[in-house]
Amino acid sequence: MFYESDWKFKVSKKEILTIEDIEFLVNSFYGKVREDEILSPIFNDKIGNRWPEHLEKMYSFWQTVLLQENTYHGRPFAPHAKLLIDDKHFNRWLKLFYTVIDENFIGDKAQEAKWRANKMAEMFHHKINYLRNNSF
Figure 1 (cartoon, rainbow, N blue to C red):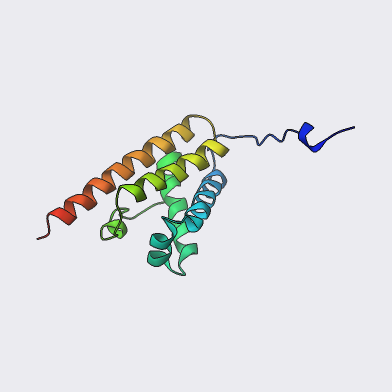
Figure 2 (cartoon, rainbow, N blue to C red; figure 1 turned 45 degrees about the vertical axis):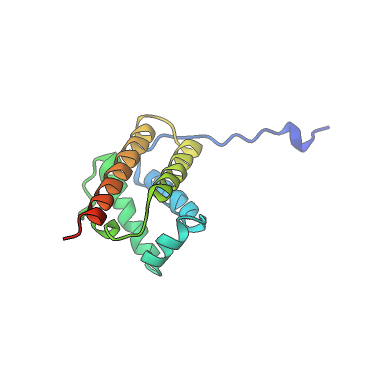
């Protein structure tokens, strides 16, 4: 006789190799963001009903960054410059991003995604603080 506790469900992790992988990463991550008690108010207020456009932009961004397919054309910092965000927001953003990567992906691109997300968070945080403290 089999009991439910006898079954071990294993979710297979995969490498980030295609645009479909990028879309899964972005959709999974922003699904968590949209439900997060700390981040959802910031993102939902800024993005409003433009989530499909935002997700498309994020697909292009990560496709360019991770797959070296030059599909993103923009300035990623500008939309974030005036947001009222601080350490707790950046830490939560990274935690959710790392969680999605660790739950679903393996390999060099997965590690690169985490490294790049961390560097982006550091840069954005630094620039936002600079702008706040050096009003002209």
